[in-house]
Amino acid sequence: MLADTNNTLETRNLLYFLLRPRYWLGLLLFAIAKLIAVSPLAVQRLIGRSLGWTLYHLYARHKKIVEINLRLCFPELTEKQTKHLILENAYMTGHGVIETCAAWFSSLSSRHKVTTITGLNNIEKAISEGNGVILLGFHMTSLEIGTQLLAKHIPITGMYKPDKNPLIEYFMVRGRLRHMTGLIQKQNTRRMLKSLKKNQVVWYAADQDYGIEKTSVFAPFFGIPASTITATTKFTRLTGAKVIPFTQKRVDGGKSYQLVIHPALENFPGANELADATRLNGLVEQQLRSDPSDYFWVHKRFKTRPEGEKSFYS
Image (cartoon, rainbow, N blue to C red; front, side, top):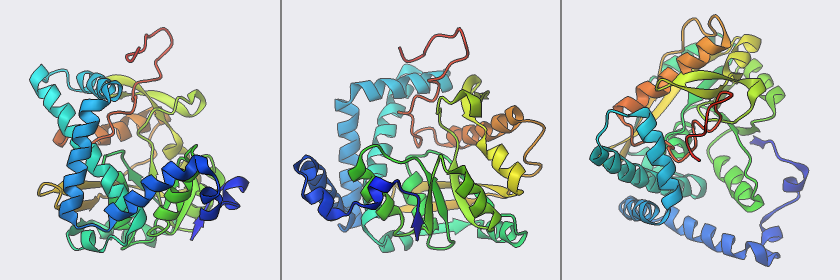
C-alpha cells in the first residue's frame, strides 16, 4: 500500500497526536466514529439521518450555498420543491458522513453483502488494452463508500486532495488504505501518469471548482459557465488511458447500494479541452437529473466567474 505524504506526516503516528492536547478533542471524535463504524447498519442509518437533520437546522451558511446551487441548476423547481430537496440533500450528507466512518474504520463486510455491481467487464476490457484506466468519479454524497466498496473487486489507486488538518489527514489516509491499493496527492501528476502507464486503475474526480485558471476552462454546467479542470484530457493524451465513468447509488432507503461501471468514453479526448470539459460536465448533469439530492451541493461549484461577472455567493 502506497500513499503520497509530506515529510512531516511521514513522521507522525498515533502517539504524536496523543501527546499533544490540541488534538485530544479530535481524537475523541474519531473514537466515536470508530464506535459508529462497528454498530449495526440500522443504527448507522438512524445516526446518519439525525446528523442530516442537525446539519439542516444548524448550519444556515451551508444551507444557503446548497439553495443557491439548486436554484441555479434547477430554476424550474417551485420554492416548496427546492426546500424539500435541500432537506433531502442534508439527509444524504449525513448518511455520507456515517458511511465515511464505516469506510475508514471497518472492513465494510456488512455493506458488501447488500451491494450489487454492474459493468466490471468494462474495466477488464480497458485493462486488457494496456494503457491504464481513469475511473472517473463524481462528488456524490456516497462517493467515499462507493469507491471503497468497489475496491474489494479491483485494485484502485485514488487521487485525493490532502487535508490541512494533520489529524484528519492521518485517519483519512490510513482509512482509505484499508481498502485501496494506493493514494496519490492531486498535485503529484508525475505519479498519476506513472500509475496509468503501469496499466493501473486510478480513481479521479474533476467536477469541482478549484479556481486554477491555467488548468481550467469555463464549460457549461446546467447551462452556466463553470470553471472545470482539464486534467482528464491531459492525462489521456499523455498515456492513452481509457476514461470510465463510475457512479454509485443508495437504494431501498439506504439499506443497499448499486455500483455502476459505465462503458469507456469513446473518442476521448475530443477536439479540444473545452469540448471534453463540456462532455464531462454533461455526465454529471445526467446523473443529477435522475437524483438531484445526492450531490455535494455545499461546494461552491460556481465560485470562479468569468471576468466581469459577479459572484453568486456574495
